[in-house]
Image 1 (cartoon, one colour):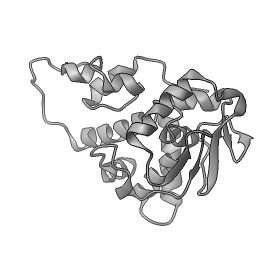
Image 2: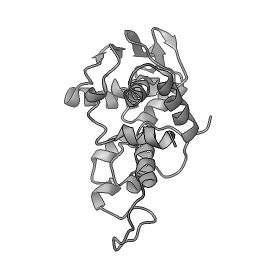
Image 3: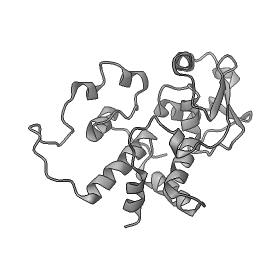
Length: 211
């Protein structure tokens, strides 16, 4: 299975935005974005030409793709699926991304980052409706129960991640029983409900793929 293996913090530096790719490290003083270093390949004196419309659209797509930890081919397939669905393509895309199993595991606080959540899924630590699912891109349906496998409930990484629930809770379209290490995907969120991704402009992504 293809995956990105390069330096993760470089992605945030390129976008000049915290993409929350390394969990708690992103919230600490060790995060490179806090040091305000120039993006890789950028003139350190700040000299830069005007970015083209294509360049702006590309950056929006790259930000969203990297936030959810996806490679280009997979992201493109998700966009095409969103395009075929009834309704607004941009909202459909966000709903599909939020319904990915690795993202739901992250939203349930079983992992401190989406990348860590992906590893938990791949290694068989996560159940959907009591059945082990090892596909991170598996689409979770409303009312599906997502839980930690019994043999995995003593994992330190999961217990440490669940501490965040006491600080921040979970998103309103998810319910969680932290003691039982299980939760439920209640309903697909609306675009306006997804408030923690910053100023992603999905219309630009649609325009990019429409070229």
